[in-house]
Amino acid sequence: MSQREANGPDAVLASTGEAQGQDSGVSALRARIAARQPLGRSVQAALERLIESGALPPGARLNEVALAAQLGVSRGPVREAARALEKDGLVTVILNRGAFVRSLGMEEAAQIYELNAVLFGHAAALLAERLKGRRDGPEAATLRATVARMDHAVEQGALEAFFTDNALFHQQIVGLCGNQPLQAVYLEHTRKLLLLRRRSFDAAGNMRVANAEHHRLLASILAGKAEPARRHAEAHTRAGRARYLAAIAQGNAAAETTDTPHEQHNGKETPCC
Amino acid sequence: MSQREANGPDAVLASTGEAQGQDSGVSALRARIAARQPLGRSVQAALERLIESGALPPGARLNEVALAAQLGVSRGPVREAARALEKDGLVTVILNRGAFVRSLGMEEAAQIYELNAVLFGHAAALLAERLKGRRDGPEAATLRATVARMDHAVEQGALEAFFTDNALFHQQIVGLCGNQPLQAVYLEHTRKLLLLRRRSFDAAGNMRVANAEHHRLLASILAGKAEPARRHAEAHTRAGRARYLAAIAQGNAAAETTDTPHEQHNGKETPCC
DNA sequence: CCCATGCAGGCTGTAAACAATAAACACCGC
DNA sequence: GCGGTGTTTATTGTTTACAGCCTGCATGGG
Image 1 (cartoon, rainbow over the protein chains, first blue to last red):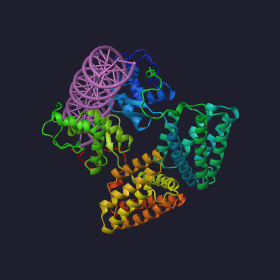
Image 2: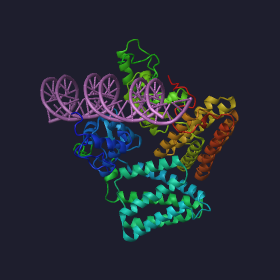
Image 3: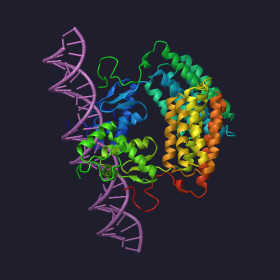
Image 4: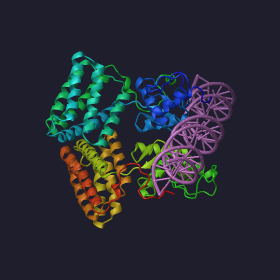
């Protein structure tokens, strides 16, 4: 059980496009240099991918030894990653029991949406104020381009593309508003929603509606009208919450498990491996 | 260098009132049972105390082996605590260099105040809505009692007491507003401000002003007027920011180091031990 | 037939050892 | 004297090993 197969059969940690060299030592070294970050960080990213993909469903326990073996590292970095995920609210860790993937109750999801609405609204207001008299500056151009891409995606019904740019649009607004802590909090909670509710809704109709909301929001921002921008941003986020709640209300009862750390509703063990 | 002196000469980890038993094994066991939490958590609390007390000033490096020896634990829990502090924004960790106590630039402190203003304002609005028609419920009584204690403290010029209840008042409002993620974010950032700006301002005059603001805020909340409550809460937080900035502007240039991880402005090594 | 007790296994919490990096210092050529 | 270079040393990143806890199962008593 030593350090054989440092790059295991399924190299989950291969995030940078480093193709597997034939030899062990040199390629591993290059990978480390390219990564330029502690292993724990890479492990955290890997675990987040596992959670997002559903390989680690809500309620599953993060078995340290199994994950360490799977990722080709030792338990230390895995523990570190687990604690980081706990701080991010993705898992809950219980003394001597381990870390369990959280499941977002409808209640908490709604509260996070509410928080995000306030943050996003304030970001929009700040940005509107900031962009006064700069309707044609580079920031405005960036925002316009993103919305234009979304228009294109809506026309073609390209859901995946729309989603990418949708997330980007929100990130650009909070990123350009100038308040870094606000941005960090907003992104953290948006990420939490994204990872724990596995893309439940997203009908094509919603895409059209959301796009219209984007247009109204951007217009207010570019007009330099802070309070209307805030209102539109809050309304947009709350509309997203409504879409989410409506989606899980009809049929998709997946996200309805409480966040208590029960091992798993079905009798199966953790299906992560 | 083995595990001798598990409770070292300066037992920084003795947080629960467990008086030092004469023997080693039994008392240590009881302490662990009483604590009922991983060591890393205790170490984090100890480090926060060291930061708050100034034993670990901004810019200081957290030497893992030294701290581990001082606290009577091994490096693992110390590392864990350091990463947790990083997530909380109290330290920055650089690869292969270690963790450094952050120093809050005036810029970032102002942004945190801004964020807190929005969060606190929204909490006040939510609470006002929530307490409609319950002016005499237990929550209202709790808030009134806290404000009454602060009135008393103002009369007597009891700064310490005022501060305790001031923090409590803010916590009660965000705690009773019903949005748990919002509460968590607000408390986290308030804590960050408290630990990294070492109580710079707080003249007696400010105490009177702040207390008057509390009264106005509480009146709006108990009247069930959400928007006025929000405005008063935001104004109160922004006034706090103004008091802070004014205080560091005149004389107290302590918090003016940038948050770049320079070893220390003076040539001395980390004065933590 | 149901429930308490004892035992075994797996897993986490913690500690100590090993490897690798980066800063500090001395040395050398110029 | 001065800049560059090799070496040394302290410190972090990672791994491995050990101890304690929790869980699940089997067994025996009610």
